Structures are given as C-alpha cells and as structure tokens.
Length: 313
Length: 263
Image (tube, rainbow over all chains, first blue to last red; front, top):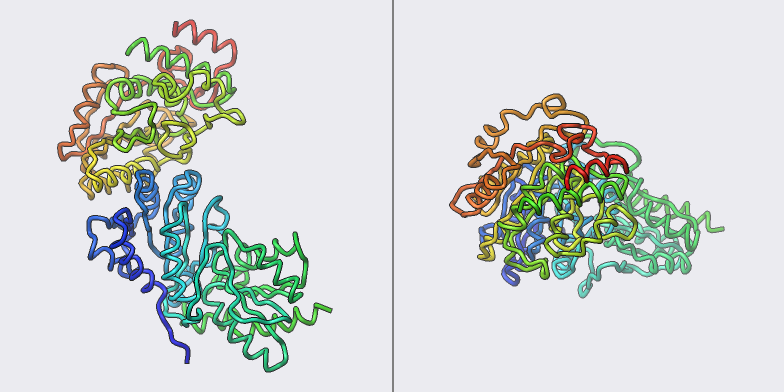
C-alpha cells in the first residue's frame, strides 16, 4: 500500500517554515484559509497574514501591491477562485507587471469531488499557462510540494502552484530534487514515454508496472512544471522511445497534452495519445468514482500506451 | 502651479494629437489634482523612482495616463520630448499605465484594480514601519466596477490610514454621462458608508485641492476619500463636458484651437 499524504498540508507546513526564515513573506487568503491550510502561518504570524474575505479580485490586486513594495505574497484559495474568477486581475496586476506573487491553489480538479462541477478546477492550467512570464507547477505529491514551495519563494516572478483536496500517494523517490522547468524520469523505459503531471504520475507508474508484465517497457516522466515546459526532455523522450502518452487531471484542451503535442509537432512528430478530461463537466461524486467516470485511470493509460505503440509501425 | 497646470494641459492635447488616439477628456479633468500632488504634496524623488520611502500615486483610471506622463515629465522622471512618442512602437509611454515607465507604480487598463493595489502598497508600508502615503485616483465611471467596493470595504477592515482615494467626478464615462450609463449617486454617501471620511471639493480649484490632499495624508486613523468635482475636457472649450473626447484625440485643426485656448 502506497502511503498517502496531503499536498495542501505540506504547503501549509512549508509556508510556516518559510515565514520563520524570511520576514518578507506575507500570506493572503480569501475566507478559505482552513482549507488551504494557510492557518498554520496565520496563527504564528498574524501581522503578516491578510484575509480578504470572499473577494478574490481584490485579493489578487492587493497581492500585486504588496509585491510592488518588496513583499513576497503567497495568495491562496481554491483552484477555481484563484484562476478563472480573478483572471483579469492576475493578467493586468500580476502578469503584465511581472509581480513577484505566488498563487498557490488547492482543491484542483475533479477529485475535489462532491461539491460538483462549479468546484472542479479543470480549466485552470490552460488559463494560467496562457499568461506571459508565469511559472506553472503541479507537484506530483506532498514531498514534491514542499520542495516546490521553497523553490518558488526564492524565484523572482509570478507563479501558479496547483494542489489537491484529498491526500494523494507519496511517489517521489527519496532524494528527489525538484528543479523548476525540469521534468524528471521516475521510471526508465524504452518503448514509450508516459508524460504525466500531478496526481496522474502515480497512475502512470501503476500503468507502467502492469505494462511491463505485457512486455511493454514504459518510461514514466513527472512533468511538474508545465510552464516553462521542458522541451528538451520531451524531444529526448520522443527520439528515444518513439511514442508519447500524456496524462493529466485537466481538460484535454490547453493542458499538458496540448503543450506536449505542440512541442512534438514542431520538433519531432511521433504518435501521441492524451489521457485527459474530454470536453465535459462532471457531476458530484467521490473522487475515485469521478476518476473512473472520466477515464483518469491506470487502465486508460494502458489502453493509450498500447494504441501509440501499435502506431509506431 | 496654475501656469504649470496650463503647460500640462498643452502636453495632453499635443501628445494625444501626435498619437492620433488616447483619452484627453479624463486627463484634462485631473490636471489640477495631479499638479498639486506632484508639485506640492507627494514626497518623491524623480531621480530615484523606486525610493522605498516615496509616497505612491496610483492612477487606477489608467486610460487617463496622458496627464500622469505629463506631470512625470515636468517633474523630471524622463525627458519632456518623450511625450511625443506616446502610444508609438518602442515608446516608454504605453497607451495605459505600465511599470516600464519611470514613476509609474502599477499596470492598469482594466478598471477597478488600483485601490486594491494601493491597499497592498499601504499594508507593506505599515509592516515595514515606513510612513509613506498611498494615493489612488479612481474615475467616477470606474466606480461601476465591483472591485472598487471590495477594496473600499477592505481598506476599512484593515484600518488603513495611509491610503487616500481620489474620485475624479467628471460625470462622463466612455459612452455617455454617468447618470445615463450607470447612476453612481449618492457617491459620497457610498464612500462614507464603507468607512471613509469624505470631502467634496472643486477639483479645479488648486487651493481647495491642496488643502484636501494635505488634510488627507495626516495618517490620523481615518481613510480619506476626496470627491473632486471636475469638468471633463477642462480648459478646451469644445472638449468640455463632451463625451466625444473621452477617448478621441484632437485632429490637427482642433489641436491648434486647443493650444490657442491654452496659451
């Protein structure tokens, strides 16, 4: 049994540590602070914590103002409220000014579950990757989350970090070191490369285990940074394995599959199959039920792998 | 300062005419307000635009940036000749506020964001124990935006007293008069009910403007909102109170007439 751990709890704890190390770190929330776990920071550093209430547009522009005077704002809410709702404020006040604001969202994707489609942030990566100069990261687990939060605190420029509501499998190897903009091979393989992000990295590893029994040697790559994308790694995977499958908990349009496909078409066209959410919203349900319903499973990844391997010719 | 205001008005009509586009109306209405700020009230240093202790001025109605560029140039942030490059490729002077311009604090162009940004700058000042004041100018049409009221509420919630809101009440927005597009009255009562101390002034009377701005930056525990009653297009007869010149530059003939009136 794989150990489960919460990415948002890892975020909250890391943020508290950073708060102790750097007095310029400030935290901004929008009345969801218990859920985003920024309350750890708030409790110890009440003077550096600003709850803006349920007003996300205001929250984003305030963060830009704090950054303009030398603060390092971490602003947190749910994925739907930290991307689509205040998109214009992020675009003008943060992206166009290249403000040093770290947007860290929790409750992304359909595994947010029973709150239903309004709460399922499945468009956020497309939106955020469209913003010039943003760094967009989806950690694969809680261990990587802690490293990503430390890394972006030191980086100058706007960032969007996407975390989940439920605990998810701990899969990053001991000794793993996150490097911004770098994808990382989590399992070697020569027949096909599965490029996955977020919770789908664990599913990809599971799929690769099953495929090995069939004699298909699948490489699994954790693409945690979606922007800037690690082109060099994607091209190398295409050259070395000749086929690519992508896997993400996001709409098919505009996420990892779109980004990888564009890199491949322009540089090294090989057969590609994308495992993602089709053009559909999901209803209320348990996380695992919804993943099954939308085909975000190791079994669907296996189907996609067999299909691209067959197309290699 | 009156002669300075006239020079700034001349810059506004010349730079929008040279660009062939821009927003002269709401720039001309704010001339006395910005002149008083930059040449009397603000603590600032044109040779060090990022000076940590500077007072901040945020032009939330970012389309009226010609008036800001004109005062910044006159104050010495960049050469007055730059004004003729406004809106042209390669210029430091973008069509709406951008931080690339020395002295411009924030990016704008989508209304309603400046007061929130000002809150962030004011909170940072309080955290760092710096005594600067943040002034934010908001258009009256801009008060249609819900975010203005999110910010008005939050500023009171955070008990900021180093933040001043200035509403340029020129009574015209993009398409037509504010009373026709979206009635914002009773605007003074609205600000008061959000926890602000409101003062209404004639925004073209320099003595009133200076008095109100200086009273507002005392950091006396209150948040001051100044409602400046102004005339859109002030100083150019055919632009005054004329919605047509919200977002249209004068043609060469109109420019000559405007410059004669402003001589």
